[in-house]
Length: 320
Image (cartoon, rainbow, N blue to C red; front, side, top):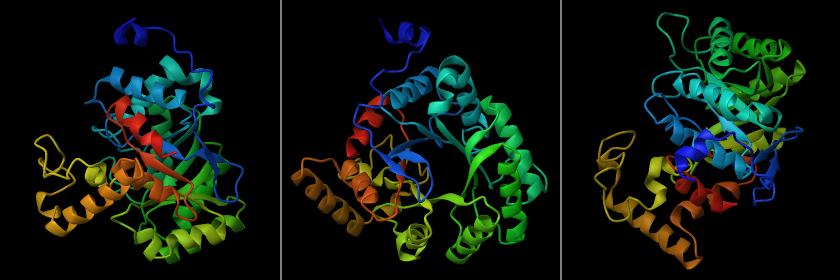
C-alpha cells in the first residue's frame, strides 16, 4: 500500500502507542502528565503546507505516544490555518481519540485588524479562543495560554479573563508564555487565590539561549509547582548540525528567515562543532544532545519540537 492509499484509509491508532518508548512527566504539582516530547505546530502545518504531509506527521506523533499538540491562533501561515488543519485532522482521524489528546492554543500576538485583535485584553482573549475553537472543531481546549505579557493592560484583567475562560468550560487549564519574572509571580498568586492554578509556563530555552534559567523563571516554576515547556529547543536549526560546515543553500539562514547569516560567527561555529563532537562521542546527534540537555534541567516538563517530516520527528524522539 503506498502513502496515498494509506492516508485514504480510516485511521486506527497504533495499539502500542504507549509502549513505544515515550515517557510522561508530571506537569508541576498538577494531575496532568505530558509527554517529554510534544509536537509544536508553529511551522509546517499551515495552509501553505500539503495537508497529507501534515496528516502523516500528526499520525506518526500520536502513534509514538506524543499526546500533546501545541498551537496558537496565528500559527500558519496564514494566520489561523494551523488550527484549521487541526480541525480537519479532528474530523478525519483524531475525533475518536480526543480524550487521549492534550491540545493547547494561545492568544496574545496580532491576529486581526483594529484595536481588539492583539495583546491581552479580556475582549481579545475571549474572542480569540471562540474563533480558535471553531477553527479546530473543538468544544474546549485542554490548555489556553496568554501568549505574551502585555505591559499596558492591567494584569488583573488578563488573568481574570483566563479564570473566566476556565470557569466557562472553554479551557481546562491556563498557561502563560514569555512573561517576565515578577509578572509571572503575580500571575501564579492571583490564579491560585481564584482556584485556577497556573498549569505551565512556555519559554524559549535551548543550549544557546538560557534566559529562563538566568532570569529565574525555571526556578520559580519549580518552586511554585508550575510546569515548564520549552520552545525553540534547537534554536531554529542551529543545534541540528545543519550549519556545522557553513550555510546550506536551502536553509532558513540562507533565506534570512528567522536566522540571519551574520549570526553564524566563528565563535558560534566553534561552539557548535565542540558540542557536536561531544554528542558523537556518546553516539548521539547534536540535536539529540540539545534536546536531552533541556530535559535534564530541573523544572522542565516537556520540550516542543516541530517537524517537516516523519523522519525528522523520529530523529527528535530519540532524545527520550
